[in-house]
Image 1 (tube, rainbow, N blue to C red):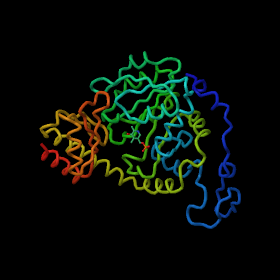
Image 2 (cartoon, helix red, strand yellow):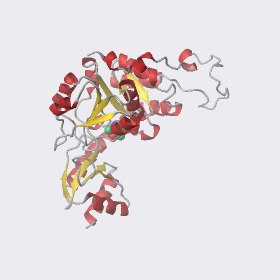
Image 3 (tube, rainbow, N blue to C red):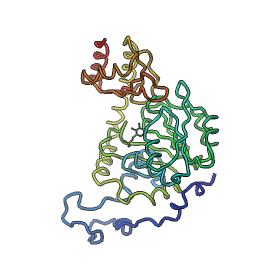
Image 4 (cartoon, protein in one colour):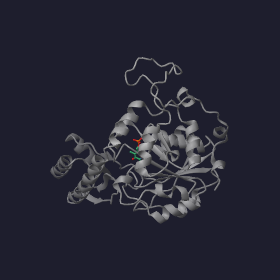
Length: 345
Ligand SMILES: *Cc1c(COP(=O)(O)O)cnc(C)c1O
């Protein structure tokens, strides 16, 4: 597959903005920087951040075992996904394929960018309909979004189905691994060199506990990363975010302990949810949340709000009629949730 042919012509022609920090990347601290019109009085944030986030990428590169040239960072996954749209999808011409029920941002970003959305539903047990997806695709289908583990269903897609799509879909396949750290399935990162059309996205917002700093991560071939680099805003990841991410990523044991705790709590919560009389069914989860079918989702959602507990009502999503999505909280929070569910009529 020729990835270059998938890039929008206007992006191929683009001459990127060259920032002061791109033109001179000083390594020694005793340089005098008079090139970026910054305020010279030091306060920790008076300088522009590194546009290539080299320190942070080096840390991530070591954790993930991938060269920094295969990594692009953004202001949350949302920015990363938007960059992918702008690199590959021509407004009012191209389309993308999403698989409801899934993460809502794929279609919001398509709408913002004037890209047609083709929807192919997941099966009743939230798996991929490979043939239908391939049938829905045409020559203008530039991106297929696979969210695995999937939000809001929580399950992972079958590896052999994903592999089929990577081989047969003639566009970019984005595998959104926001919840991969809660799953026993290995990340698709290790397959990047096998599939030139594969983009894997991850985030520090979930397992790593840094939703507040907004850091999304994109892994792809060096070529795709170089294209995305040309269109990203020069200073898209701010200095405080870069510092905090480096600090917290160095405390890997804490994140790992928290993930283990959340997995233990997920199991407990699941078995307790199944004992609640109006919970009809819970769906198997590889993520830090559980989707459950109840008798009347909107009624139960409102009752929980009244008791001070906010969950996500997913009843309007395809295949999620009367479903609530429960994020796994601390042990105390989960006990409070279960006690409350048992107390409401
Ligand atoms: C939460 C979530 C993200 C994370 O988005 P950020 O912008 O990085 O916080 C990405 N994809 C899915 C499917 C999610 O549920």
